[in-house]
Image (cartoon, rainbow, N blue to C red; front, top):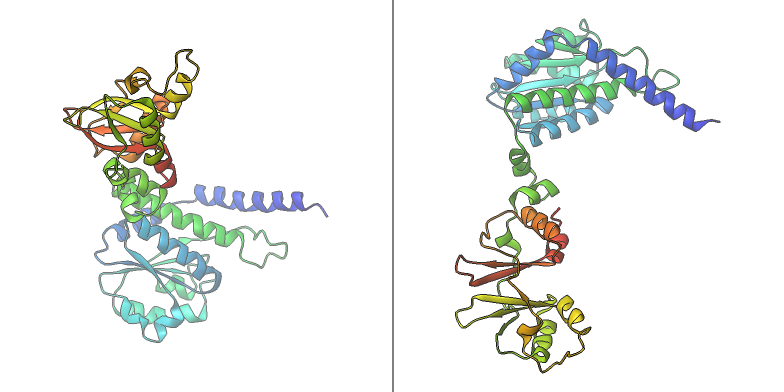
Length: 320
């Protein structure tokens, strides 16, 4: 059996379903977006079975892209959760046939509150279609299922239409990356847009030495500091130089190398620093990568050391 060919045919059928639906998008879609935009309450999505699973994903997408939303199971609604639907809410009800028994049972109660109802079904004359204020067509030529029974193309189309609604709402609300990140503070984008250098830089027990320190003592301090680097500062804590493991390795190649030499002989003078600890950690990572260094020193405008930020810390915290 050629499974590759079967998979390709499945994808072709579902892709063609989406393309045909794209051609048939009409003013009803515009009206649906306008109804949701005018909603003062929440967008409630409901459905059973496969439609319910699609609805739950749609509600999650709406909620994470700036449209307050949650999924309501029709059965739970019949047993008390109808109270979660308010007069200022909007309901999206999903049923491919439009005749799902559990869903049909709650429709009269939804309409009793004059709650705007957007139906997603293949049949405008179905029970769902008749109760709906407007219907978004979910019409497929055939399911990808070889028996033309299991919801495949139809669920793919419903999900895609939900995404299309979400994208329209995002554009209408001028939803930005920063808005998205505020709903995902623990995600990669949240870290990229919210975590600052001040949140990650090391400020305590910094490996600092004075300008008259011998190289051998500087090496001990590097080991104790666990950052692969030691900072050379003056009496006012102003940065003079930096000595890294790399500086030590390069020094070992010198014929006159001596552990008794003053550390400044082998130090990197005028090391890379930043004065703004409030810049994003992701921006600091860009600087580190562009300058091909391991560590950024954070100072004030007078070059007094405030902290150190190592590339390993950025990586460990998922900054990219």
